[in-house]
Length: 125
Picture 1 (cartoon, rainbow, N blue to C red):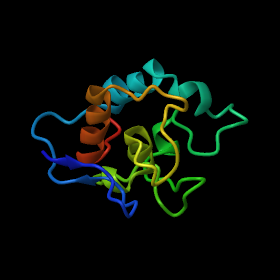
Picture 2: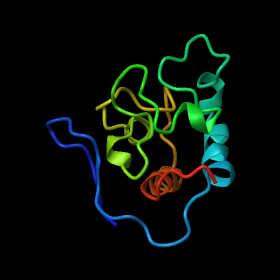
Picture 3: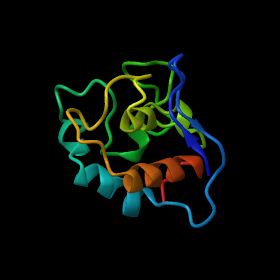
Picture 4: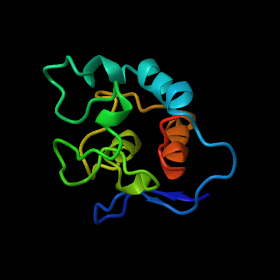
């Protein structure tokens, strides 16, 4: 699989081929990453400072337009390059600053798992 960074034109990150293997699980793989990196501290339904997306419930961020970058989806199933969340964790600058805010950037293994989950349809499994 090839992953390329953002171009000098500010294009979303490009992702060429879907991964081979078992689809990632939202509950078992993705949500724990959000917990580990403090994403749910700010991106929760009770937050008064969250303007980008609520990550506490699958239905509030997958196939849902970004609050700041509409009509772009927070997570566009099958297309991490056009998903706000993936561009933010990859720090492309296209849809805003690095998340988690203030860094450090998530480890590549966590970013790859989120990318693969999105590529495989961002299933609620």
